[in-house]
Length: 192
View 1 (tube, rainbow, N blue to C red):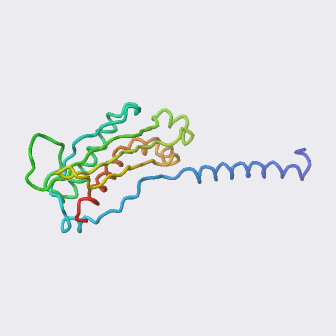
View 2: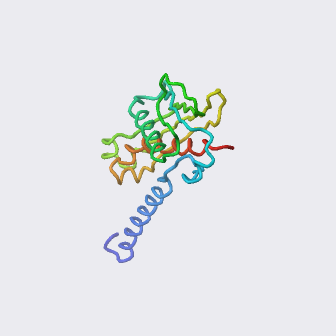
View 3: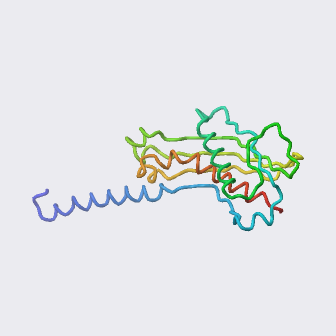
């Protein structure tokens, strides 16, 4: 079959078709996803600010989430750092026994789902190891207990990008979710 001139051309076409279909599969399934948050420009937030303090109260995990401690710590630390770098609020801190005389926005976070692909799985399986993802339910309340805003935030880096960075996108997911939480707080801290 391969000795015939016409049969020889058939084999490269089959190989090319297979490569194109696999490439299309990766191209259409490897998109990054995150919750769309309308970002408030840092310049306009101080003029429209309703709260002077942001206090992070609780960050809990759903019982079905396995080993969430490190991801929760990275996410909260990143959110607090993001808000402090914006230099918009008087205080950004974890809750203590201090009472706040100024208007205060309280942040409660709940980790509802988490999947972080390990470095070993990413090394051996690449993009076939699947996608990492993190879901956080963010609830903002004022000092009176009234709910200011509540939304589930979702982040998932694409599997191909994670394979290309050897798992760097997977390891950075909790930090990036913290930045998303910070943007959510900034967006909802102004007067409505």
